[in-house]
Length: 283
Length: 268
Image (cartoon, rainbow over all chains, first blue to last red; front, top):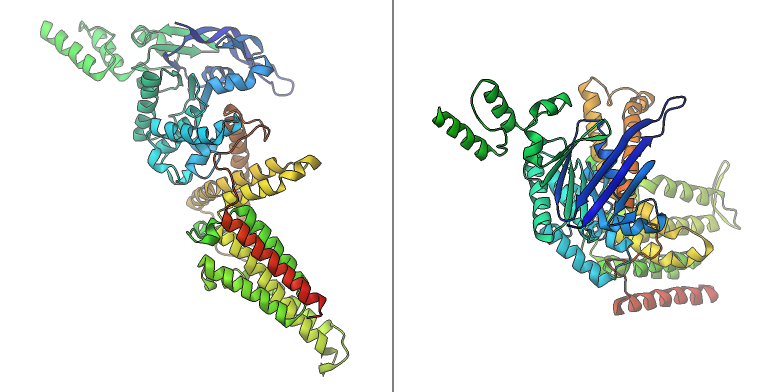
């Protein structure tokens, strides 16, 4: 598979307070993210996961090492627009990323910036809104929508750029469970149907269940990297980094410690229930 | 209580007055103001009032709403009226009492001045009543496009205006939240004299400002992520286009101004 984003010994430091030492948020990250994959980046607060996300479309520039987006170096200023058009970003607070006070105007913002002809903007806006299932709100005022709806408008605003990759920087953190579900099912569908690479930054373990790959960040470095099963079965390692395994794995882990012979790699509730039933029946 | 605040009051509708291109409406208001300041006689003032009445009729905006728009400037109107009435020197005095004297020219200019201000305000309000803030900003940007050559940041100003409009409801919501939070901790915004009330607002304004700055920062990043790089090479979803009705309206406007100027020339 071709590579969407590649980082090599990426380092980043936030400017220090007067007299202090600069704080390194990223200390040597090497990653290769494949096109069309669904990657979840986990980590506790201050682990560098949001900083990492912001280097993917040149909002933050590396202090050391490189970031390549489809082979383009983010340090090359002449490629800035091309990089940002390919890697769209959705942020945490939906209110602070909606620009216009009509839904369609907001979705049109990115293509307008890119100088797309008016008729094509119309098409892109309609398609993007249909893709996130918000077409009926085309002339609504965004501030009257729910959190989940606002966030889907923000996603539509990114899709209208026709990006190859969407980075969601804790985009579900401020939403209620229903809103979170709306957003998650939307991005899963976009990933499946349009082949858009999704990088989901989150601290909700259960959002990682269906991912192709889970990356755990700790102290500015990649601590764990693998399929959800590979990562979540290392319960003790996760705990050591201040993270908890998903509830299902946590339950299985405790059962194992009590002597019940269950596998750890049952992530979904159904798999978990099956595993326990089999183990209990086997005894 | 803050929910009542509406800025740039707009009454949606589907009349010709609503459908006119915003640029046409802005130009018409400019023509209207020029005509008003050229009017000197009862006849020309009558003509202007008639024009306004026709426009109001077309737009189906209630006269009540239009008159309500005069309320905030009532003091200014009365003040101007009184000043003109008592302090304009003239040949013939109609009324004298102590240092107060009213001349015939004074009476004339007071009446005209008051009429002028009222017509001026009602005319401009009619425009904001029939034009959404967004299209008004859009129209202004397009109209002032030529000033870009003089390095006037037209696009930036228009963008600032539309973002300000976008964030008014968000910030009102936020203010409500902060006020509730302060009230929950025993803050008192209602009692006391004016100074005490003003002081009570400080604990609301400080967090509001801080959060507004944070919002601005995040919005700027989000805009950059969506490839915003100034007005250069930008296209629009809705392109403004003059229709037949715009040409008709503009012609009518020019005719009225010409009529006023001709009448003025003949001393009417």
